[in-house]
Structures are given as C-alpha cells and as structure tokens.
Image (tube, rainbow, N blue to C red; front, top):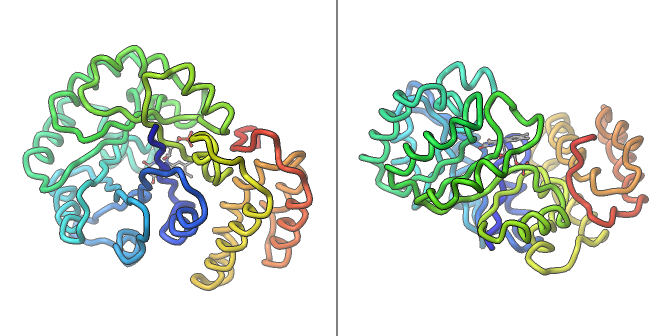
Length: 318
Ligand SMILES: Cc1cc2nc3c(=O)[nH]c(=O)nc-3n(C[C@H](O)[C@H](O)[C@H](O)COP(=O)(O)O)c2cc1C
C-alpha cells in the first residue's frame, strides 16, 4: 500500500512537509500545492522556494503545476526537469471558480476537445513523467468513463482521482463506486482520493476495496499526522509527539514569517489538528478567532488538555 500526502494550498508548504516527514513515517510521496506559471513565463519567489530541491530531505516530492496553455505547462516542466525532478503532476481538479474560469484546474474538464489538444501537446513534448490529479467529471459522474477512455490514450504516469465532480466542490458524498467500477479499464496506476479522514475509516475502506493499492490523503493527514503510519500497521498518534509536532511547526513559522502571517498559517494548521481531540468545539472556536499569538497559544494549551479521540482524524462537521 502506498499513501501520498495530498497538496493543500495554505497548509502543506515546504516547512510543513519537512517537519512532517522528519517526524512521521508512511508517506510515499508528498506533492507541492499547485504552482501557476504566469503569461510571462515566471514563477514567484514563493513558488521557487516550494520546488527548491534544497528543501527536500529524505522524502519524495512531486511538484504540481496548474496551467491552461500547454506551452506554459511545458515551460514549467522544463524548469522542474532542470532542477532534477523526474515527475510532475498536472492539476486538473481544482474546483475554484476563479481558476476554472481561466480554463485551469477542473476547468480543463469542461471540454474534452480542448483537453485532448492540451494533452496531445504536453505528452508529446514533456521531458519527464507527467501524472494527473483530477475529478470524476465536471458536472456528473457519468462523464468519468469517457474521461478515462481519453486519459488511457496517453502515457499518464499515475492517475489520482478525487471521487467527486467539480460541481460538488468538496460537498456531498464521494462516489467511490464510480472509480471502482472502471478500475479494470484504467491502464495506468490509479490513486484513490477523497474523505479518508481517520485511520479507522481509511483502514475499513481499504479492507473493503483490496484492489486499491495507492491512496492520497489530505485533510485526514493535516489533522492526524500519524494517519499513514497507523494505517500501515505502526503505532497510533501519541499526545507528546503531537504536541512536539505542533510546536515545531509554530516555531518554524514564527521564525520564517512576520507575526501576523505566522498566526494566520497556524490558525489554518491548528483548526485541522483540533479535530483529533475530544470535545474540541469550544476551544476550536477560540483558536479560529485568535487575534494574537498569546490568544493562539492559550487555545492550543487548552486543546492539549483534552484527551485524543480513539480514532483521531479530520472532522468535516467542524
Ligand atoms: C485547503 C485546501 C487546499 C487544497 N489545495 C490543493 C492544491 O494546491 N492542489 C490540488 O491538487 N488539490 C488541492 N486540494 C485538494 C486536496 O489535495 C484533496 O484532493 C482534497 O482535500 C480531498 O482529499 P481529502 O478528502 O483526503 O482531504 C486542496 C484542498 C483543500 C481543502
């Protein structure tokens, strides 16, 4: 079983990945949140820092690129190949309206004719392997069969499927049955993604579907950093390693960012971590509203007074 840490813009940045990988085992690949080359063939300093090979130690990182034009995608791929990367991931799943309006992310799913032209170009010219992260369709799961037939005609190195349509964003239920019913027809390695939130639910899902051997997990791992380790048979999350992990993230962001930026970052991280505790509701409200480092620290101290849940992970109700 291979478990991948999903890209989460605003959470799984370079310091986060380094700290997670140093403390928790079980992740076969990390992915950068998407980088988006501009019309002028530029990447921001922050994006360059995200893909700097100097920030990788002891883990595998796949950079993710989002683009609507094949020439921009290929330009970014060549920069990444020059940095030594052997795989790049194409974002064909981001549902945000501002992204899809530009024909990027899940916007590529709107027209299969346009998508075919895009894929023809990138798969004819990419110097390195290109994997794809996408959804089961734009509007309806019925689109998945045609999409898979199209993708099967390219050397897609891996296909990561989030089992929702674009129109669902992250709401409503996933459709694992759509993905599983066509597994036999999928010519490339398939990575299942969506709503595997806790070690218990993830293990049950994998036992019920033994034909899956690669999964990608996002919010579950952002909440419980030991999720992959536990699913793979290692020990469950322990409170002292959890606190040390939180403190390492906090200290690192305080060193790297101005106070307010560090606080914003940690509120986002903290609201995921909080899901792992019993009766976290009240403290979580305070943590979300913390307007100073002092208030944030007080809410985290209060949180760590609570016991961990028996099956800690992400809770969408929060
Ligand atoms: C805050 C947030 C940021 C995300 N950023 C990205 C991104 O940069 N690239 C991407 O492909 N998916 C992104 N996603 C989608 C996740 O990678 C993943 O597919 C989604 O969270 C479903 O998996 P999960 O149920 O295990 O969390 C993001 C999701 C969230 C909630």
